[in-house]
Image (cartoon, rainbow, N blue to C red; front, side):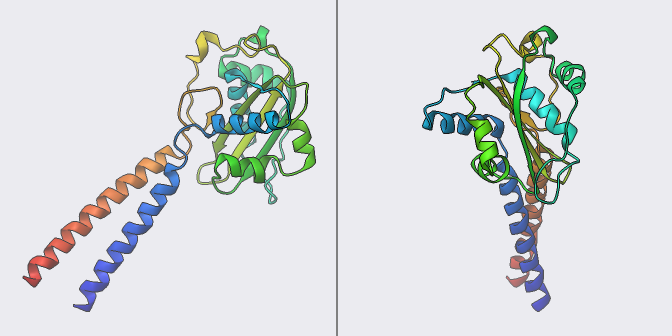
Length: 229
């Protein structure tokens, strides 16, 4: 009888842990890169600065930036990575389908990483804008456009990348065929309606495991009830 009770409790504990894990992963649904752009613009307008145009092309390049640097997260959650100018024009832009003649000037960038996923507001405060230098970049009056990218290393840290530009709205970082050629395999970028793919594979796997465990628990409990009857 004691063994049966322990087995039942063990089943319920495993189910509870898997359910909790799936709920944590579900927080990444949607596009947190878009949320971060909104937070950035709210911060600027609170200080009487104009909103920045949310550029999908610049956002996709920010995601490429994060992808390139995703193996360089230091112990204090900073990113030790400096892509070359050629990386932007010869790798990032083609990968995104940005029309090269429309590649504008990137005026500044902010990058950061974190061992676990943080909601956009927390990522803003604790990963990206942690000092006056980053705040000064954020509120620079020369910026006109912004793009945000986010990606997770496989079972590793999350990387955030924010790029700013002084380009003219809708005429810089223009995507070919409105971005239809982009095949987003990992992460997410601002200006896109696509949900963030980071963690979705794990999320669906976890939900499947929860379903299986729940079914097994139900079968086991049903058998015990029949035995007791």
